[in-house]
Length: 408
Image (cartoon, rainbow, N blue to C red; front, top):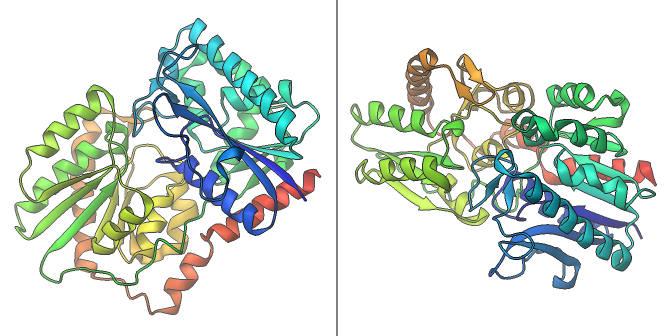
């Protein structure tokens, strides 16, 4: 029986990498593997629960208590929960962070004795693993945010690159990521596997959809962040609402910090047709998607946003920024269900240049209008089911399982 240790430096919920962790654990359970998970947690909260694992096989590292007297550092600068930015951490915080993870991992190693390790993110924790598990094969899953953190934290970049390059194989979301990982880590392309991303078809489906023919709903789900394009979506909605009084905007998600608070305050004053649902679980999100006519993701930077596939599976039309992962890995399968908005000229990895913002908002408004006019998706069509087959977690997990097996 294969023994797989899953590692995630963040909470095992509320983020794409957390969804990946839980999906792989579910698949591993179905295959009969022995599994454990090392995850981040916050002081005062209940021990993280993972459906596929008994409590004794979930090993959390708690933050906001000695010696980690700061919130969990996030792989994105704006997280859906209270977090610390890596770029603002001082040397003593980084040292305490690494020491605490190393201590926990040594304890887990002695107790669980894994055959293979699956770590998430090309970042500090993955870069440490060969120091603690030199003889155990390691697959590291790149979600794109680690590559971004290397640019935001140049003082940490070299040690992360050198540490991660020692790991055996790398799972990436699409070909552009494969090229970036190959260049960044200086590893052979054969060690990098494009696995894509999956969605939970037991949760995200179009059964019992509740769309109104007279009132159209637009939905956004994600962090309250400028990098996610939220202010541009709000501007686009105000433009469209002037033409159509029977139009509403649902916002699911949250954020922390000044940026998120400013967006929250703006949304709260936009009137009765803007509904804030806060942070929702997967089943609640699926219900919102089954009510939505159009799901919008106006991000400036993404890896492979699975939320688009989830919304499509629930029957919503899609509008998204024309980002590489979306164009190459999602749009070809979803065809005319998705409307792409040209990515604006950027002044940094996730900030558009000032002169490009106005045209982007106009194009975003037009794409949403076109998606609304296109009408409902017919889930009875064979092409609908065929489009989704590529993204099922069982398909993605099988690709990753082959990586584990190849190392054993």
